[in-house]
Image 1 (tube, rainbow, N blue to C red):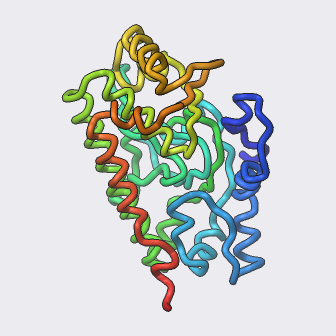
Image 2 (cartoon, rainbow, N blue to C red):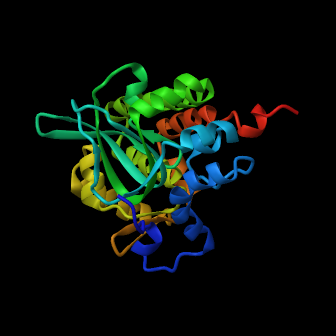
Image 3 (tube, rainbow, N blue to C red):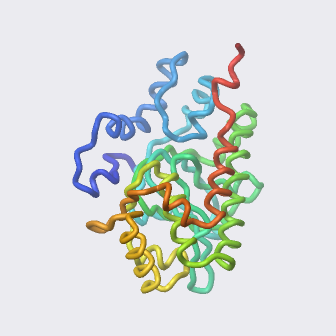
Length: 278
């Protein structure tokens, strides 16, 4: 699926600036750029791809396919073969455990990550359901092609494993958070993590959605968000939440937010410049 990718800016009826347009054009241009200009680095927002050297980015770029992530699009289903991995550029994907008609979100994946990392542990079937929450764009690659690239270029494998460790930590920490921390802390933590994942303070999410993924009563979610708004932390408008005071919101969040955020930061600490010989 290709075509024009909807963004948060469109949800707010705001005109996209030059930087936003560059993000929209990046996925389609990646393969063309790395093959035509092997000594220049194309613009990619996905953190995993951005950390690769030009050589390894060119190797994986030959197999990447641009794809629009539309709202409620299901990328993977549990117990189904993992056929593709998705390097997210913009938007937000919810990673969920689904069983006996119930659902619980274990992680959110944005521009720092990849959907479909379960294949790294040797499995051929997805253990989670992956659903697009905020529309955006991604680079898609067949798992067989990615395995081949990882075998030929260990650097690609190393970056993916570093990310997978952070993602696994988030999934485990989310389970602990759900039984140990109260509603206000959990909701503040989710908003902070989602904001980091999309690199934006505007989140087009509803009270119903937050209630379902966090396993909370809708009335409780509404009550907490009203309190957050009265304290100047957020602003609700036209079906979206805008974070007005991210620092104060972080103070409301439980320790899980900082632990998970730090895990992703550590997985990205080694930059491309660090890997280049001086």
